[in-house]
Length: 326
Length: 123
Image (cartoon, rainbow over all chains, first blue to last red; front, side, top):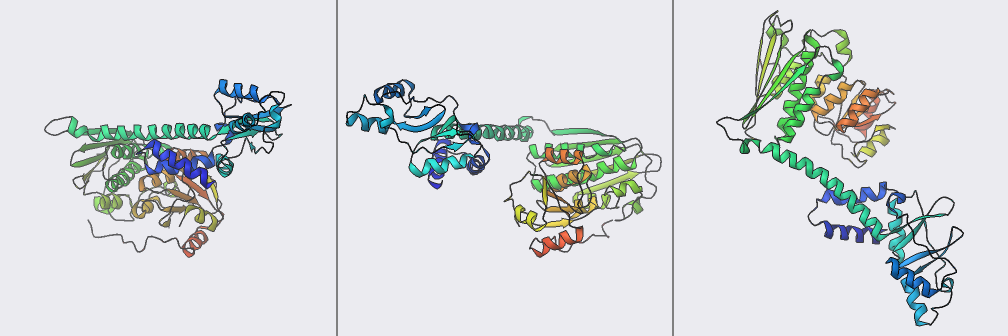
């Protein structure tokens, strides 16, 4: 296996040039997860045992192949290669049946084995083709170093294109502050959060996190913002009876988050800021929330926090994150 | 600790495999309070929890957690599995209790997060 693998990797490395190292380990992943039947060619050119060496020679020339299995009654009885033909020609056996010149020790591979096994056999003897059979030994396809390489290249290209797409989108998004010129450019994201909609809670935070990643904000800051926004979003879901709104204002050097609601408001602001203080109902606690750590968490991860509220007048939470060190 | 060792130590079953078995898990933590996870979670860590609602997956997403281990033989509801699939988070379940699952992992060399402190005086 090593022989073929190393050769395969070397070939790929040369072919793909600067493709990232992770793409190369992707090759290893692929050969252990791909089945032979997905890689093999199914239109197998076969040789009938009644054919002469000369006839096989013409067939190979016509079809541009350098070897073929010899098949009788759906069973592989041998394999004939260009080397066998050359030897027969030298010895003047051109008009004898091909069965005299073929090799009868044929290695085959079962269709549902993994591609790594093919590499094992192809590499060992230096043979370049391997008939694929089903569980009953019937010929169903053929694999060559060519079919394997072609398949791997196509799969790598697909994954490369996908990564490239994501990279390009991130590139475009992250350059918005250079591409759009004004005295103060900002990107504003607005999200509506419904109250008591527990199953959708966190969707806004998730989208905000993705947006920031795409804007190539420092990952540590992305994480801090995500934690703060998620806690704020859970507060809107749990504690308001009308839901609220989350607004994220992203500038070149800072990020402002506001969570605004027209809910019942907070009676004692000092009290809600105490770690551990909570008014959450039992069912919320059962779900792992309402431990009274939300605002403490938000305060800890943000660079500035302001909480404005009065009973009956709704609540407004303003956060600032400094992006300068990103 | 590699993900495959962790699975072995916990005699665990993979519900959803979004990382290779060679994925390195830098640390572990256990909580049933999601705010604690948000407060103390560290990127890449394994989270042991007895909660199975989708918010566990959301919390993991926000805290940058790669793997969630459900303890006490809990089964994950479909919406939790679906969200984990969407967000690329690995879900694992074990029949050990929280205490024993943590003990086994710690004993096998998976570090925790050390001493944490809630600052009470920041207001």
